[in-house]
Image 1 (cartoon, helix red, strand yellow):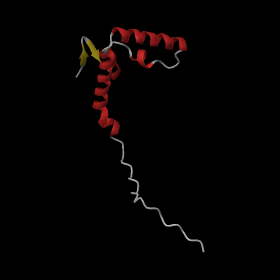
Image 2 (cartoon, helix red, strand yellow):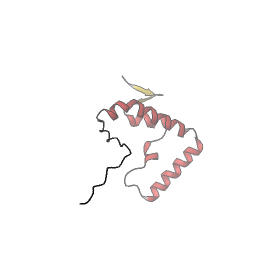
Image 3 (cartoon, helix red, strand yellow):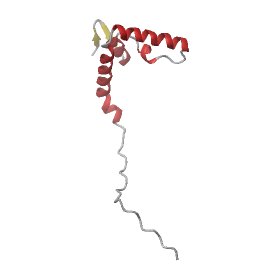
Image 4 (cartoon, helix red, strand yellow):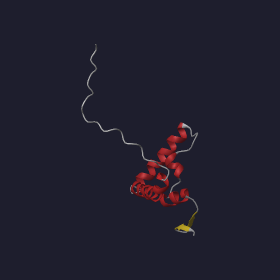
Length: 99
């Protein structure tokens, strides 16, 4: 089954996020090896976008929460329980008496 947002086909999870937000993920996450100047320009552009669309933060948060909720079973399927530590009675062990 194909998924669409507007007239755009969603082929990957990245497509879903980018089409939902209306911006590429690299704008928010950065790219490996970017220079300090590139990072500053990217952050300036992100600030401008947020100033023009203050509701974007709420949309992004909702999308992230939905994605986490949808993938929780897969995230935790390989997790095992840790053993519980021994219960403390609050008492200290008696000190050994030197002979």
